[in-house]
Length: 241
Ligand code: F6R
Image (cartoon, rainbow, N blue to C red):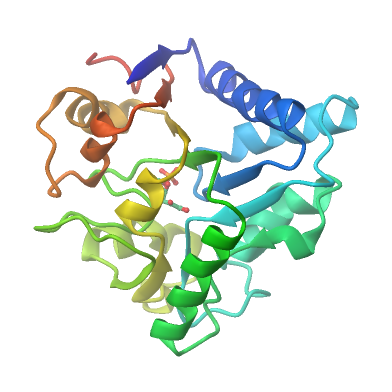
């Protein structure tokens, strides 16, 4: 596991974005795994800038997002599809048909998850996967539990995640209680993984993830077993390393 401690959020975002820009430059038909949340917003802004500067061409890129709330339409302003459109897809020359987010509007969990997993396999797997990090160590919506879920699956959100995400909804009652997420196995199949974490409130969990025991109680700790992971943190999130 390579750890990069950047001086600031902007520095972290730029350096992590450079990995994605280089990936697309080297392989214009690359398959990227993408994440939502507050942390990657600066990274996406940096990639938009690269596109505007003519440095990166997204026209042949394929993407698969980690997760989506179940029960939200893609047009809902808190859906992860909407987030991706607003933060990246609407601002670069990606073909929207090549962008994939689990279909939260599909009530048939088994069919939705199987189709998503099959889509990733058909695309040849993910070359470079972006991850954020939850305060409890979750990646995607893989919450602490007693085993590592393998494939894309339906999850019940934990109270702490519902609480954390409620800041983005009008009321906590509006936060969906379920989501579709790539499994830990899906994530671990990516050929390269980049994780971003920023802020003092992530320092404890970053330390547990990179140097604590590998346990499904801290889902991201499994990344210690992946051969090609880079963790980008800002100085605050890296303050206990
Ligand atoms: C979202 C996702 C989540 C977030 C995590 C951290 O697609 O995969 O696991 O990465 O909840 O979110 P932020 O960046 O908002 O702290």
